[in-house]
Amino acid sequence: MPAAHAARRLPLAGRTDAAPTPPVNLGPSGWRWWRWAWATPQATTWTHSGFLWSLAKRAELEDEWARAEQYDKVKLLPLLTRLDEQFGLTPRSAAQLHLAFEDPPEPDAPVAPVTDVRDRLKGLG
Image (cartoon, rainbow, N blue to C red; front, side, top):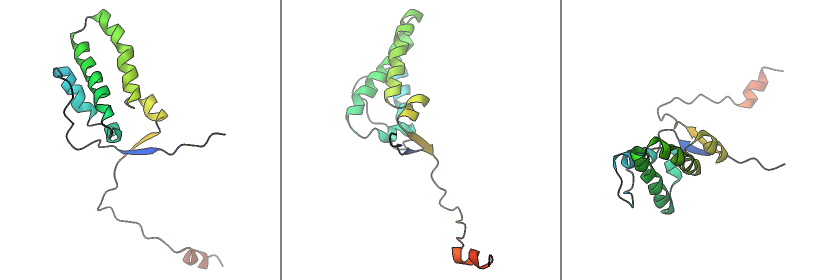
């Protein structure tokens, strides 16, 4: 039986620092996608500079989608979906990559007191 993979926990709030500058010129739709993508929880895993070019290509395709006729959109959709899956941006790919999205613990949340197991056992005897 294969070993279970531990989930990679990502902050639900996403990446909080500014998106990097894309290595290509983007139109309005590409810029909108670029800013959105870099604000996702998945963006916290894009630490290698190699992600920039692949993500820039995906953003360029948003601009192409905005200009495309219906027939061309049908041809673009599989490529868009495949790239989104590679970046963990679809539910299926997030599951395959073992990504778990979670809220950070609240800093002011009270911690429940821990009862010593010996104190619990005293009442049983």
